[in-house]
Amino acid sequence: MSEKITFAPISYTGWGSLEHLEEEVKRFNAKKILLVTDPFLEELGLTNNIVVPLEKAGMEVDIYTEVVPEPPLAIGEKVVAYTREHQFDLVIGLGGGSALDLTKIAGVLATHAGKVEDYLNLTGTKEIQSKGIPTILVPTTSGTGSEITNISVLSLETTKDVIAHDYLLADVAIVDPALTISLPPKITAATGVDALTHAVEAYISKFASPVSDALALQAIRLISNSIRIAVKNGTNKQARSDMSYGSYLAGLAFFNAGVAGVHALAYPIGGQFHIAHGDSNAVLLPYVMGYIRQSCEKRMKDIYEAMGFSATNLSQTEASYKCVIELKRLVEDVNIPSTLKGFNITEDALEGLTNDAIEQKRILARSPLPLLKEDIYAIYKSAFDGVIVEK
Image 1: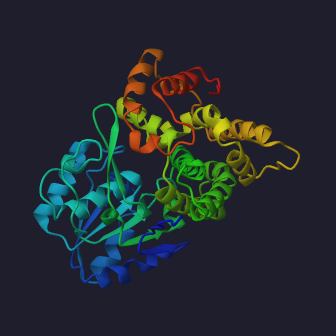
Image 2: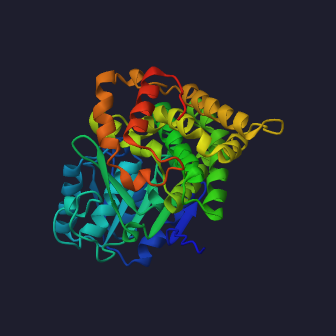
Image 3: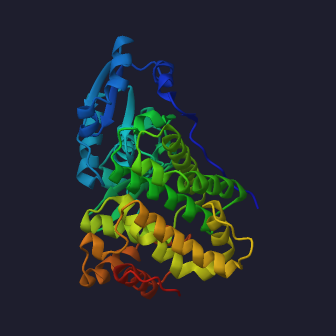
């Protein structure tokens, strides 16, 4: 059976790779540029890494900072309207997943009619028809993988939805670990476990392939062995490099194989309680994997070994169980709450979360174990109680 493997057209990775930005901007003959970024990054002066060399080269750069974590649909509508109004030649995204996702929809939908909501996966009635304005994505976190995927995530009233199309792929991705040095421990942890979740879910996905498997396992190796160091000592160059490469590889893996149950259940937590996506994934990761463990024991044994543990004398069942325990330990070690209670989510919220999660059919379809409504509730209850249960 043939497999379609998709990568972003051009990627630069490694320490100092931002030096390629100017040459890439010139390749598009861009004179009027929109920089979409987080206001905190402008405060830190990180935007100067983009603005100064481009303005010296004679280009006009307009900085747009109306970016918030887990951006709601209204923020997406605003950035698209702004991009349409000012007719830019190129859009650059600098920041975490929120800034990069907004950049992607700004670039594509600037040349389309209608509202952003018209293009949503679950409820939209319009289809993306053309590539739009060129985009360059520069992540400052090691987690979302947004720089090399074709998806933009937006928060709705109680859940999340996506706009997904290959035209949302960036023309250029620049993954420079040097830009992650100033990332606080809390965000390092949340985005890092997000990346790990991408790799784990890509590896156990029903749509995994030998290519996505290789990417996912190497991402798991890199992230598992560097995330604790990166959280404790953000200036550690090797740890930051490994996290950047791990996030990048995890993004490529899940872009091609997809994510599954963890993300499907995480979206309503973010939507209803405005908890960061990485934290939502982290708190659910061991409970989802524990619940579905028996459906993917061999692959979870592989994950356990990729995390750096020996399974030589273990059965698949034993290794897969230990894998769940180590995933939970990793989340705890980077100081992310390991239960829904830890995020002040009450038990009476579980039914509403379940109702929203079951609607994430596109994502749930990739789970090696079909997750019905009662299964989803059982996982939420498990994460609430802090007790891993199995199907």
